[in-house]
Amino acid sequence: MTTPTAYPSSRLLTARLGAFVGDVREAVGRGLAPDVTAYLVGERLAPHLGADDLLTPEQRAGDPDRYRQHILHAEPDGSFSIVALVWLPGQRTAIHDHVSWCVTGVHEGEEHERRYRLVPDGPGSRLIAVEDVVNPRGAVCGFAPPGDIHRVWNACGTKAISIHVYGADIARLGSSVRRVYDLPTADDRLPRADGHITTADGHITTADDQLPTADGQ
Image (tube, rainbow, N blue to C red; front, side):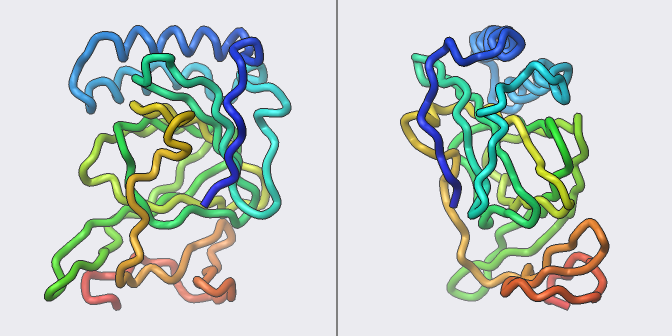
């Protein structure tokens, strides 16, 4: 789903990123509930977003085939990790949830997010889209499972970069994703920045970009 990079040594951290690692370590070390920890980490992330000296040029590099993950730091005790995700125009995730609490902040560009609820459907389950969110540069959000099912994509015409902090060892796990959802959903259409719709097969239409209702209409 994503292109990973090897975990770099600490000497590749910028001074600003090193300071942020220390701030996250202090917040996580309090041992508070996951949602409270995510809130505290989000407060510490916000001042760094958009700063030119946060990432190295290598940590800003994308991949033409899929969005790219750069592991910036993994705490030795496995308590948290910091990654940068780089999205070229049109790149997106699958619908997924996460192994731990997470904080995300948009460092560059703009990210679109669609959030879902899992509901019973006869003997199985299906997904209902409940909210579309546009996250511009500087936007921060945090969450803790359960209830963290979503999809993220870059609908703008330029690169987007986001900083993610997870309460898990992503260097060991390789990804923050707990489960990818391949379930019935009306979410075949993703709105773009120009108001057009990109369907699952890549076709662009001019249909409205309203969220589907519970009955799929």
